[in-house]
Image (cartoon, rainbow, N blue to C red; front, side, top):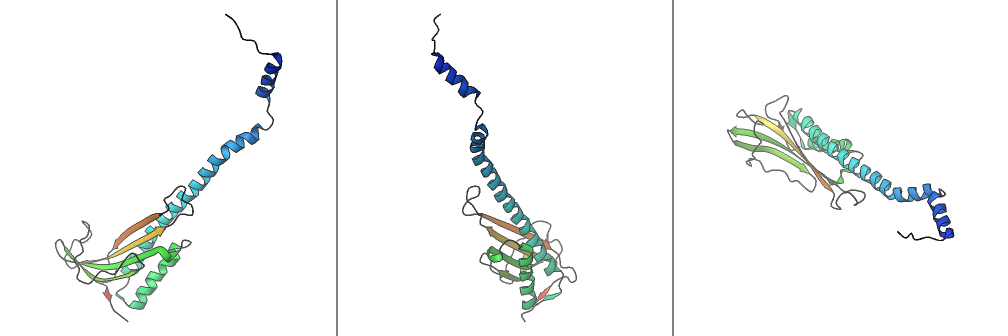
Length: 190
């Protein structure tokens, strides 16, 4: 078997290159930095998305809860209730927050209708009174029972589009609550 012999100078250079440790940390850092930045930015974006999802749940519950505590609601009170959600959604902007509160009454088995409805934001309009509105099973079980349905939609736009779509996320939440003090909350325009 014949061995290919390298000149001693080339072998010496190879050994020096193999054993050199100068600047290795800088090279490793340069190789790892893009991965670390990607992980950091991704964690921040996903964390923001999770936080806004939780805020959507809280806004829906607060909207239903405050409404369900009333016996009568005026226009001013409804405006105040909807404005209170701005404090709940903080530190996120309320500009892409859409809300709808609806009182739904069970007329007969399988026949539920809108008593009144209010909406704020670009994604919702108020349901017309007496509109048939199907409810999930178990929400309305007794004839003439009413329930407050609070719907929330929030359009979240990520700060970067590396991890989430440029269109962002749309958070949708619905909460049902039974009126606490009366069987049916009346809605007056004043």
